[in-house]
Amino acid sequence: MLEIIKSVVYCNYVGRVSDYCLERSNHLNDIETVSCVGSGVIGYSWALYFSLKGLHVTVYDISEDVLELAKKRVHESLKALIVNGVVSEEQSFNVESGIVYTTSMDEAVKDADFIVESGPENYEIKHSMVEEMEKYAKDEAIIASSTSGLLITEIAKKAKHPERFIGAHPYNPPHLIPLVEITKGEATSEDVVKRAVDFYKSIGKEPVVLQKEALGFICNRIQMALYREVADLVTRGVCTVEDADKAVTYGPGLRWGIMGPSLVFELGGGEHGIAGLLHHLGPSINLWLEDMADFKSFPDNFGAIVQSGVNEEIKNRPKEIGNDSKSLAEYRDKMLIEMLKLHGKL
Ligand SMILES: NC(=O)c1ccc[n+]([C@@H]2O[C@H](COP(=O)([O-])OP(=O)(O)OC[C@H]3O[C@@H](n4cnc5c(N)ncnc54)[C@H](O)[C@@H]3O)[C@@H](O)[C@H]2O)c1
Image (cartoon, rainbow, N blue to C red; front, side, top):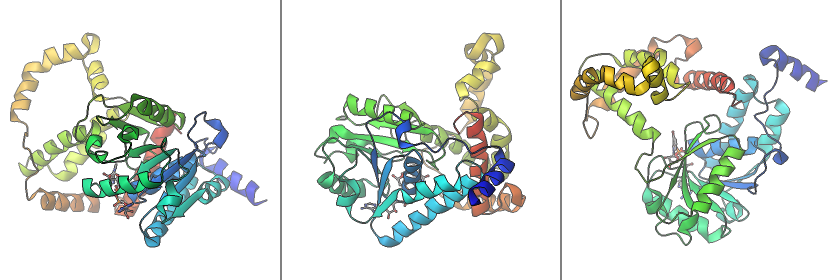
């Protein structure tokens, strides 16, 4: 009876529950058991995603308290997926109870085919995690670091098997954003890269592979190029933090959510394409480039300046589009879910 009531609620809300939650048998891949080492903002979300895709998941962290927080985050994120009609309560229960949490590295990684390291962004800590993981992992297990921009060659430099290390950089939150940037170190085997790409594709991710190592990878470099300009515009007094955010959200951000910047410019060039656009606007664009920011570190006082601008921006937002950190995150996830549905990813 309860099940019938629940399905009525979902029908009223979105029409149907999506098939985001996969049965184990629905993806053909040799990777069945995944271990998430480090269960913070990124680690818990990876664990949730893998469990949603029907994989066996273990989660390791350094204390029971941290693991409790991860469990709470998994629960809260699943509640949001239920409210937004992505999973049913029954699926949510199975996903949640399918994750095993442990403070024993041995227990966490010994059976894993694929290990995701999401520890602090620091070479020294990652080196000690590499040593610990390799002590107990199967020789053939792939180890993927969530690092936001560190080099895999450096992370794996003391590894027994550096050939099995890749970077697999997600975007927050990994249980929703499809992109994974795959990076390889000097010793990474091409077979490992191929297996990882196949794995991510099989569970609905959109992997892109960097052909060369580059700090910050593709998207963080693009984001920081944009953000350097935001910092310059704001500190020069050209616009407020709020107007810079509004300009991106209601302008190019809408188009970037549909296609990348080169395709957007291709359309901007009409029948002459992007080459025509650059030819036509080139002289003018070069004047802008001359005037644009090229600093190599953010101004010292920018943190304080932007924080006060963001505080003002948040004060001006109506509650329904988020006006504190909790409601902003809820609004972001609700909108992400709608966009992912439009992209056929949910
Ligand atoms: N936060 C983001 O937006 C984001 C996005 C993409 C990638 N990343 C990357 O993901 C990784 C994790 O970032 P985060 O934001 O989740 O950080 P976080 O601080 O939220 O989580 C880090 C976790 O690692 C655990 N930890 C500390 N020492 C450990 C050890 N020796 N062994 C195992 N676990 C240990 C901590 O207890 C904590 O739970 C970083 O490499 C970061 O660059 C972060």
